[in-house]
Length: 322
Ligand SMILES: Nc1ncnc2[nH]cnc12
Ligand SMILES: [Zn+2]
Image (tube, rainbow, N blue to C red; front, side, top):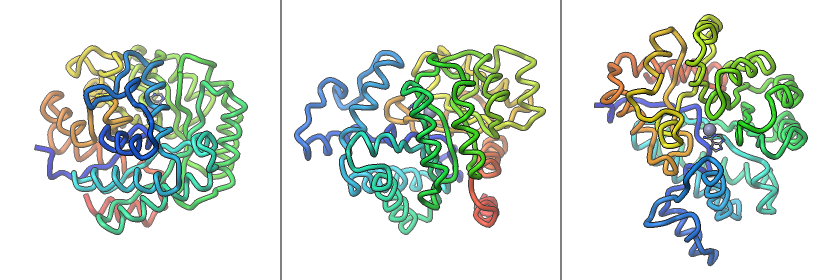
């Protein structure tokens, strides 16, 4: 049983962590019709493109700083009650602009929510600024420039998400240079919807310490060896991968093979209610379906803390809590 285990995650998109219940209460507040993206109390989507549409429609239910505080507080409190001691939330300054409050107010609302959750439960949180790939390289540079100004102390990393099949990683190298030069931790979505080549491109052009997903590296044995040798940490999201059809089921998911090959892997929830999962469920599936021992699962949590984009005193305090 993983219920009482300490947990940590490096990869959760904050808007994607909205429970359908919270989405419905926000929709009622603003008089928004959700029938296009919530049906029978669950998010409706069929493929990655319609998932992104449902995700964006959900994100647009949060309009004010206080809405964002409520979202972060609700999610972080829930996972803390399930044993999480650390969470890195992927946050998008573009979303602050999209709703008209601006990136600073968006971040400050999220930070207020993180602070409330920390006061109640002790959970530690950091924010990873994300550039949206399908918005194109120039918009991603803008997101990197925003992150590089270090507008809030909880912002410690930079990521690239969105439609992986658009553009090549090299098109985003400048954005990552800007973020890296500002001292931010570097991670990038690759090897989820696109194959092993995208993981190789990420290593060559972006030099990340972590990769968001990266699981399709399994298609290339040399690449798996390289990941293991270079100690690159994979933020693995098995529930998300199965829900999106990247792998047909948990039995054929490569987490076990990557772990056995010596790749440093961690467990993550991605967009939990969209993918019918939660951080707690990822831990439980790793144990009961994938057959990882408690010691192996604790090892993945340790890897997450070792790879977290936090200051050293915080890392040592979190490691001591394991
Ligand atoms: N799983 C995912 N892959 C790429 N971009 C995303 N944005 C939100 N969730 C995502
Ligand atoms: Zn993701």
